[in-house]
Image (cartoon, rainbow, N blue to C red; front, side, top):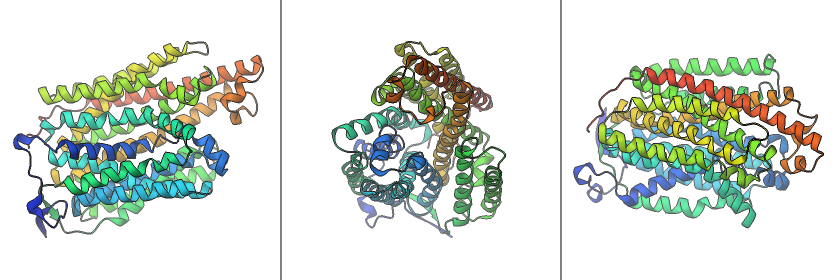
Length: 504
């Protein structure tokens, strides 16, 4: 039924890199390759944000603009647990190499796209590979290091998130200004090739117990259908269609029905892509709820705060990204701190509680921002939010690894990545509906939803003032929603138990 085998399915096990003495973990070169691949997957979720107007000017398709981002996120979401299970069953190294290959092929196709329909389809293809990049790096590190030794390494993984969050839009704007928007995708090729070379030549994993079983394709299909339906519901509800329209109600029924059926299929599957046994662990279940909620807070605020910066304060696209640097710095520093402190003390329960409370409080603090608030003050107020997000993301990742058996490491980290991505997608969609509703009630002039920041700044003062107040009102609605999500996350964090970290 099962047999021990080298995880990477390499033909020459004697050439495998031996485990470092004293549990030192992967070599620096291998770790660099894993982090580079992880960074590529995260960057491409945000890098197109500042170049979408340029893409529309070249390819057209303004009505489908949001799907350039959404198709990538959905594909990455639904493929994440599948890549995790493929790694558990057939080898993490091989699965990771295949995911890099698919990602690079998708990048080439995106750069060659001739219309918006092609670009959306190729972005989805690229997202299929990105799902494997993210879960692959996490599961490989989770196998190479026990939780008691993984803190510092996982903190290095964690800092990729804030770097991608702010660095993606900045890099996209720079490449578009200096070269062409297609280089937003072509830049992946040399970096991805380097990752492929390092992992292919240097990564060797220890022998593991591999189970002979078929992939749960029925479960993967149902999960994909459920996520797609709920994402469309969040994206279209209250904007394209009314919340009580047959289309939205039908999507709700389809989404919930598919996920309920998915749960039943997973309980009977020999090797489910999300094993129900994972959720028998109290801490694992709670941190997945945390990850989902805080993922919604992070992407929701970071998506709509730049709108305020551009429409109200007159910042450029690149400058509005730079104004989020305190948010990035807070996440960056907090994740490094948590990694070090947990490695030293072995205690982690306080960090998700403190982080979710800080995230909620940071969102509430930003409510002080008004139409006339200095830009520097607004930028500085994002720091507490960033620190809170960093505390939560780093600690929940460590708890996930500590709660899962090594045989389920890919599925466990895949579930965490999946829920963070879904939380972000739904957070952007639902908070976006709040934002749009507040724009209308806040006195946004007729037809102003189609205006660019540059167009607004050239209009009469009375019109500009109306837009500024409406956008500020929309941002306040987003921040209130984010604060509520943060306090809900705090309640989940309060229930987490302090379980000793595994030593092997």
